[in-house]
Image (tube, rainbow over all chains, first blue to last red; front, side):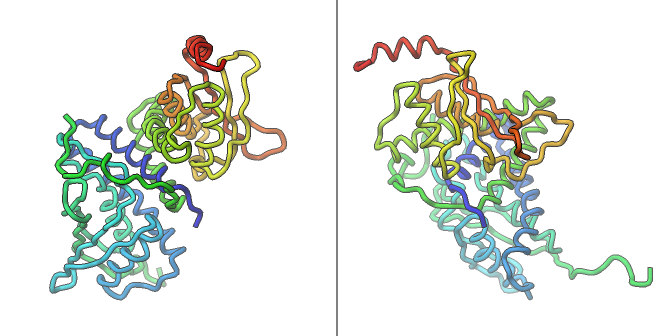
Length: 171
Length: 196
């Protein structure tokens, strides 16, 4: 894949978030907008992932989460995440990021402490998985910008359906 | 006003010297696409859209200037107009696009106007401008970056991006037009500098 300087990406993202904060005033709205943008990105990004990653179809959600963390993050953010804290059913897990390229050079001021700065990523994951028939919930539970020790996203599978044609052969 | 909860502020952290981390161009393209769409939803005409993108770019530019001065220029900042333009043309361009800009010219008609032109800037790579949007150039974002860098260094300017058709080439080149707003003041300032 063609590469560019990561700092340009980081600063562009930062400048965009600043613009959103200036436009919306309400921090919750900014979080929502970031998630929405991520969702749009995810819907398109999944095609590139499927075309270029050369991975096999995932057999279960555990494998899906691993692929997101090891292959997806590597492809699009040039970093990897680790997958931990599975629940007993294998439908909920945490993605832990130690290095998050979105947040280089970033410091959250006190009055924006409710801002989920990297919320775009949650949207991306949700959008991408929706295109492969998985309904998920994704949100940040730990954020280094808010003083936690790592970035942790909680990923929860709500429902998934196998792919089927909406029409019959003899129609 | 700006107090953080973390014990270590961002300025206390070590500053990475090389900064050669890379990220895939498509990630940027996705983000940029969303950014343009968002800006478009906030405005009613192309001029405003370009201004909005320019604003976002400006935020990048003022920060880049600082990063570049520390990293590439061993904590020095250019103080003369021509040196500053060369800095944009070579250092900034190399940092952003991996190579120097193709041309840096002074306008024939006005001495306070300069042009940097280049083709295939990666921000425009996956963008096709619909016909009804006419002359819109997504490189307005790059123009904003240039404006941020120049203004941060004390050279306020109006910077705009334009497509210019090139003979025998399918794709137009992008011209970043820089018009310094306080040109005579800048020139007077330069004359007072030692060594001129």
